[in-house]
Image 1 (cartoon, rainbow, N blue to C red):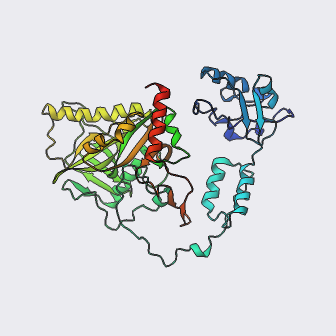
Image 2: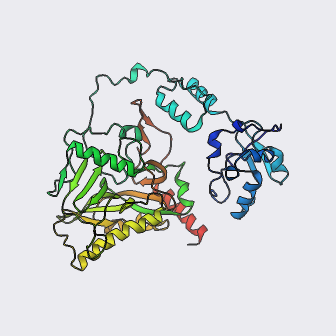
Image 3: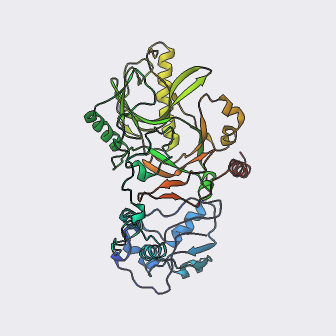
Length: 459
């Protein structure tokens, strides 16, 4: 089955403005899904190829050649589009001995209208409509279907906030994007995870500068926390982890912070409520001899408390990096980014070992968070590993290794939680609690899928 191909029996020379502009920059095809499926955008009919810039061309022949490179034969095309003759016609597939089936699907305008008519509430938030049209629509669609919010969902009379609890989560994924957008400067008395002597809340003017700098470094165009956030694993998306390569780590139950290292004397940590704290007596040498210091480096991680009996140890686990010493590394693969942040911490450790740096005055230690190949998930879920952890862990994080660092919610990074009964419940921008019908993934099911993957890949 193949998600995006096209149709048409009549052939008319297409006009340059006939192709949607979004088609030109749309990726050509996905990777192979479960060894059998691929999604790809509609190729252009061959006789119209000269009207498309060579670097933007995507033809039926090119699709078939790409499949051969993947050592796959294209056997069946299921066309889900409802387009005009400017795209590939069925005869082009038939001539190449490819079976072709067409299922005419409505466009975004018809779909929005149908949804609004079917749902008793209609679509009550204009933001949703604008976003749908921005992503999938075109200029012919009128963004005017929003209806007033029903009075029964009015928030009048409700307190501004029902809780001031700090989120303790290394993924920042317990809240939906809409709720996070209201987290800008909402705490009347912001506090760090612990009361530490070397950690100070900075003044609002300085904090604004740090927030803006971090947002720009992440290429984030909103005024909210710019860190990458995973989505909850469910029955619809969990098979993504067996489309290699993915890496896995334990989900540490701590407090999420990004760390900005401007220079030796200016190091800051930003929580997901966008509060900014200056960290004193903390160093990141560029070399083990401590001759130079890191500058303009943005790390991502989680602050945890390790406990051994009555003794507590405070740690910051680094699990990603956006900038390193004035260089934007966000577009490098996770594999490369992991090497970079591990090297930063290795240099620190070597400086301490050789006596060039004294870390005894630091309020907390810096550690690299490990990620392993997918089969390690079985050991991470086992009693032996869990007993070795000195802080709480409530699940796993699955990270695609080839992807760049993506600010905001990123659908390809998944979190699996031990107790995820409410993992898919969220508060929408309308103020409505929406418990979706997506089913959670049990530990047994997760282990079964990974074991089958291990057997198939011959690890």
